[in-house]
Amino acid sequence: MNINKIDLNLLVYLDVLLREGSVTKAANRLSITQPAMSNGLRRLRDLFNDPILVRTSEGMTPTKRALELQPVIRDVLGKLENAIQPEQEFDPKESHRTFRIMASDYAESTLLLLLLKALREKAPNIVLDVITPSDVTFHDVEHGKVDMAINRFDELPLSFHQKVIWYDAFTCVINKDNPLINHFNLETYTQSQHVWVSKTGFGVGVGIDPKEVQKLGWVDAELTKIGKKRDIRVFTRHYHVAMQLAKTQNLVATLPSKIANMYADDPTICVLEPPFDIPPIGLKMAWSSLLHQDAGHIWLRRLISEVASEQKHSQKL
Image (spheres, one colour):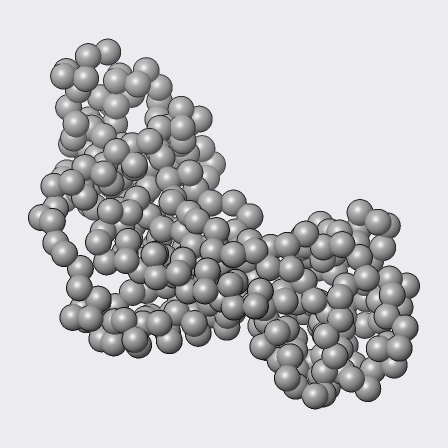
C-alpha cells in the first residue's frame, strides 16, 4: 500500500470512531454529516480490509484489527497535533495554568503533599485540581480533559504513556494496647479482625464481596497463596480512615508503608512488619499522547519525578 494514496483524514475518522463507538457521535464530534461519516467508515473498511466496527447486542464494537490499530493511530495523530502547534516556552514562575490530576487517596496523601510544597517554591501561581478516581474515566485522560492520572493501575490502555513514580512495601498498624503486640505472627494475624482499604484504577467503585478473595488485592492474594485468609470486618477506600480504625477499634490495618510512616510519631499506634511476604506496589502516573510533548506537562512530569526521588533519598538517610 502506497501511503501517498491514503487520505490522512481517514486516520482522524478512525481515531474518533473508535473513541466514540458510534457513527452519529463521531460525526457530531467532527462536525460533519452522518452520511459523510458513514462514507468514511466504508472507505476505512476498504483501506484496511476489515469491518472496523461491527454491530453487536452492546452496540458498535471494534474488531480485533481496529483495537490493534487504535494506539498506533492515536500516537501518530498525537505527535502530528503537537508538531504543528506553535512552539511555546513554559515558564513555571509566570504560569497560571491549572493542572487537573486524578489521584487516589494514597497518592494524594503521600505524593501530592510533597508536590504542592515544590510547586509553591517553583511555580507559585500554578493551581492543582485534584479529582478522585470515581470522577474520571479512561476517555477523560485519553482526550486530555484530565492532565494526569496517578494511582496503582492493574491495566492501562496501550495508547497511554506511563511511568512508575515509586514502589512501596506494606506495613501493619495496630493500637499500642492491642494484645496482639506481644505475639504478632501469621497465626495471630489471621485470627485477628482487620480493616481492608484499597482503590485502584478508574471509575466508580463497586461493593466488595468478602468471599471473592481474588478481587481483594495484594494482601489477600498473598495470603491465599499460603492457604490463609484474614477476617475482614470493615472495607474502606480511605487510608486515613483505616488508620483511625486501627487506632481506636483494635483492628489490624495492613497498609503501604508510606501511609503508615505518616503516623510514625503517634504514640497510640505500633507499626509492625507483616508476618508474611507481600510484593511491593507501584505508584504510576499516566497521561495521554495528546499531552506528551506539551512543554508544561513535561515540566510537571519532571517535577513529580524529582519530588519522588528526593523522598526516596531522604528515607535512606
